[in-house]
Image 1 (tube, rainbow, N blue to C red):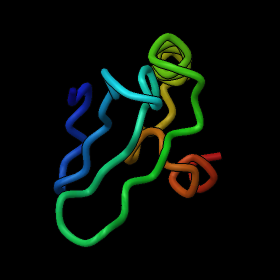
Image 2: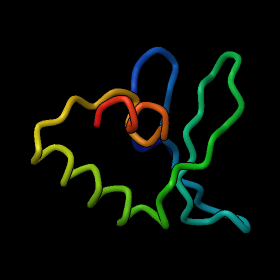
Image 3: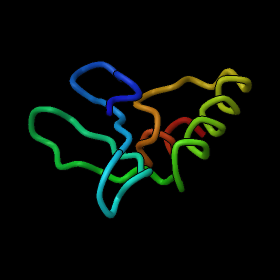
Length: 72
């Protein structure tokens, strides 16, 4: 289930079934392979996003490790 449209064909999705149930994956609809987000589940993802919003840091393709490193 898509939980975030990040623009430019990038999405964060929540896996609903199977062994990855509850995991967040980042997908790009054209050329990139899916990348598992570094969160233990939706609550961890959401709380981290809220914390980052409260700090007013620029959000650029949230959940991708490379983007997070470039913001700090």
